[in-house]
Amino acid sequence: MIHAVESPASLVAAAARLRERALEQPLAPADVIDILERWGDRLRGSLLDGVPGLAFLRLWLRRATLEPIVCRELGLDALHGGWRRDGQALLRACPLGVVGHWPAGNIEIQPVLSMCCALLGGNACLVRVPSGLLEPTRRILEKLAEVDPAGVLTERILLVTFEHEELDLHRAMAESVDGAMVWGGAEAVSTIRALPFPHWARVMVFGPRLSVAAMDGESWTDEREREAWCQRITRDVWQFDQGACSSPQTLFLERCPGHDPREFVRALERAFAEENRLHPRRDMHPGLTSAVCLRRATWLLEDAAHAAVFPARPDWTILLGAGTELPAPVQGRTLYVLEVEDLTEPISRFDGVVQTLGLAVKDPTKEEALVLAAGRRGVDRVVKLGRMHVFGSPWDGADLVRPMMRIVRHVPSLA
Image (cartoon, rainbow, N blue to C red; front, top):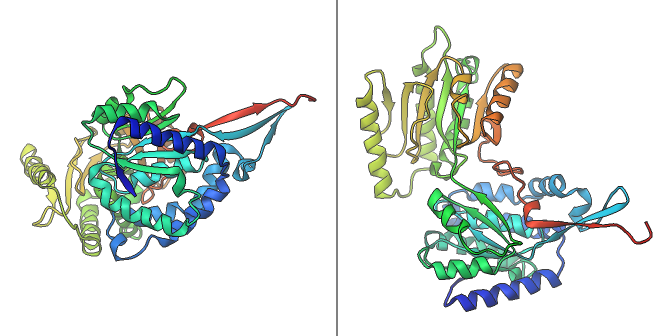
């Protein structure tokens, strides 16, 4: 189901076949959603349960998730491929043709998530699967073939693999698409953006970002809700092993007189330990192991006021301190917990790198002010803690389906 590319010419020819399929066989979003929902229901079993993010993918493929995205971005009429009136004109969403996908190599479900955004628009998809994601992607796509025996979706999908150094194949892929969705780190994104895309191609880039969490004094000191908040934070940290842009790397706690942040960290420690028991780490790259252990040591040596909580193994780490600066992320379930006088202080230092802000704030007026301040500082999503990974539209401040579509305007001859 994932093909090794032999030559640039074969890639160009394959893209041409995909384009013909997409443009000759119209596909309404509602029809795509029918298949995607059945696909999500099949994503279970021992070979799949170990794939990070799979539970999230099952939820995202539901009709209740996808229909609101389509309706918000394209309008209710577009769900079944219809026209909508705009004064004397009619508007209809049409696919671009072939959308190329360059997913990041550290999120197992990202090739599928990216691909589905373009499929919802009726496009064909040419997906480069990073070498480290071949096996989980293959397992997930096998289930799609089971629920789509007529090939409604599978015949407009081609998954390919080639090394990232093979620029001739990257160029051939770029030259062959009408749109592109690019994900990943700064170097990878810069390389893909420099490729010779057709001048009409739509290119959406989801580059490297990081995310943070914040709690006001009333929230983290509330003993009745403390355990629940810690569980929510822990789930956000565990998803994707902190490798996603939406993963919280730092938690800011607003100072509350008479309360010590170590009270909260003790509850957070229990939540981390329990989550690690339920979802233990299956493997860990040696480089990440070294980075976690080194950061533990340097954090404690940098400042006598610093504290840290962690097990003997590098399964998870909580680093406690104070300050408004964002520390360099470590990932690997390593969370900085920093006390600040006021939550507006760290937010005022955001420079556009922060994608998602997870909040727990008691006062709605205060929260509204924080959200506005964060939005002006480049934050694209502000959500309740525990929902930092909910993949919805807009994402990174952009729609997910509409950018890979054309909105055709028709003014009838007799109007």
